[in-house]
Length: 129
Image (tube, rainbow, N blue to C red; front, side):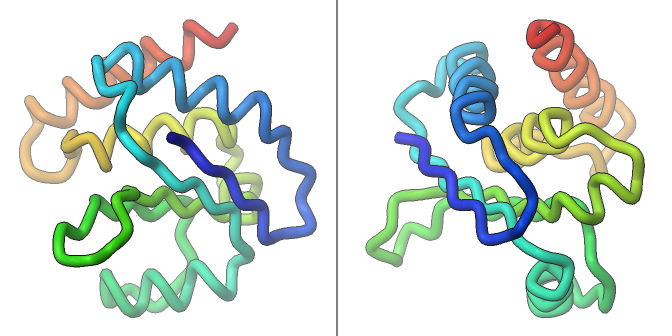
């Protein structure tokens, strides 16, 4: 199940982003994954970035895998459209990036893992066009 919550004033095409998320999950053979996607403002993402990464600034995307001891069975991708726009990126690209993170991909641990994640990200992004 995929849920999308827009907590901003930005116009978000929920149907489009639902399709993006479904394509990534299907491509990774993880269609049964539960993901919550939240679009938030810069103040909210700054608080989350400070709390969970100890970085005192807004960021474009944060990803949280499922926490097994909680009742929720959802991974979460939190996106700040304001920061994405400021960085000159596309929301779809950032969503794909966040979903790949919750599926276990990482670009910070090694160059080889970064290359794998970047290749997948480009593949899914090119499939949208």
